[in-house]
Length: 179
Ligand code: AR6
Image (cartoon, rainbow, N blue to C red; front, side, top):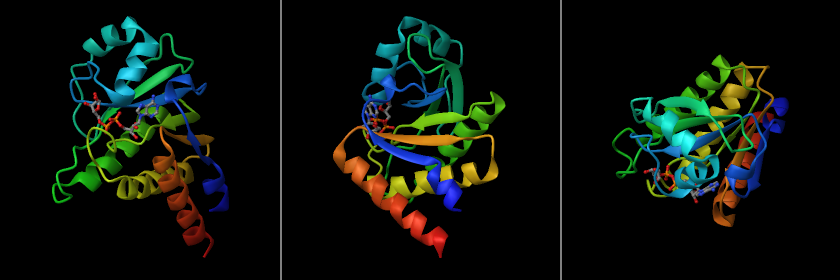
């Protein structure tokens, strides 16, 4: 258990600058770009990314699709579509968990060993970060537990409040697993 938590890293910064094999994009179902982290990834990757995204036929909420990273330091971008928060009674938690699971499935198919996530759904889509971070870390820990090939998962938080929430949730996860 200790080993799993040690393979999770939380950092504060801009995910587009990360030198990892794959970064995850919190996209929308068109996959044709938008604001937030999606806009930043498209700007940094260049127009070739949009051209490849156009060939993918969109993406359902909770699903994930992969493209190349083009001008990004990351080789791959895994695009996932988080749920829009509508009060919590519309399957939002399960859909968010599904995003993380699908990202790891797609990563496994390509033999990706290091992957970085933004805080999916907690910006424009309004998912409360205190809930989202627990779901994210639970799914990340389970994926790391299942796969010894997966070396590291990084959560890139864009602001201090988000980082504090993820760090508190990771500390709780550590405590729960050491029991
Ligand atoms: N690096 C890391 N995290 C970032 C960055 C960045 N460069 N920029 C923003 N964030 P959001 P969502 C954080 O809104 O809630 C888009 O328009 C941000 O502070 O990017 O899943 C899409 O096209 C927040 O903590 O994604 C969709 O329409 C987190 O990333 C919609 O927004 C997620 O915020 C998706 O909404």
